[in-house]
Length: 310
Ligand code: BDR
Ligand code: CA
Image (cartoon, rainbow, N blue to C red; front, side, top):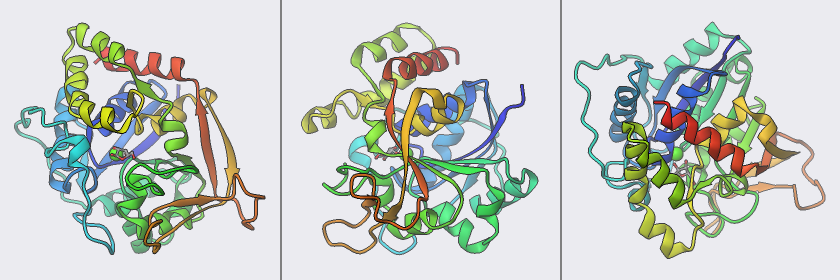
């Protein structure tokens, strides 16, 4: 089987960590590189957390450092959900003798896209700062990509504000560049990712498997338990696993083509993704497939299998 080449760009992050595990275990996919961006936590944490996940999985995917701050606005993190260290304040030891890459996230991504013209699937699961920097530095990059399948945005309400989803809110200027870039975009926003949740029984099952990855996943997600309960959120949303799963199993998802733009200035709406899905298709363009539904049972079964097999 020819595997689908994937580049992940993560603000690793509890659900980013799970998404990396899923991408590693899905037989349809091959990770070619992972870049780290600030978002859920500072970039240095995201970078080392990605190395920690590599070590937990027994892999050596190359990890690249990316942006330490958003393009224009000040840094916003999500320690209240992901813990101060990004991994629910669970201490996973730093692996020894890690091979550190000297190239930046944007240079490495560009080199990889040039080596696989028209093939590389870009999977951003954090704020889009690294990607926008790469597109600004290398204007031919969007055309070299097969597509961008991202976690971000919402056709409905937000999570960090009533209007905006976190990844877009954390760097709206970068998201604006990405949504205008011309590459095919699959948007896995809150519309679908809030359907892709673990229940407590799923976490108990993972932990009971006795495997270190299962125990670890339950432990890192428990940090957000109190926060989720406070906001009345159903289950533990595996937001970032959605774009990964979509690449290997698009048949589990349903979506609609739409025009999507990003609000970069509004005092109440900054970071909102505005789509013409629910209006009368007024935008004179379609630039994204907006994913709206997932078969939760099949999604969770595949995700649990992946984690349990590490
Ligand atoms: C997104 O924000 C982050 O907190 C998660 O990792 C996910 O990428 C959900 O809004
Ligand atoms: Ca993320």
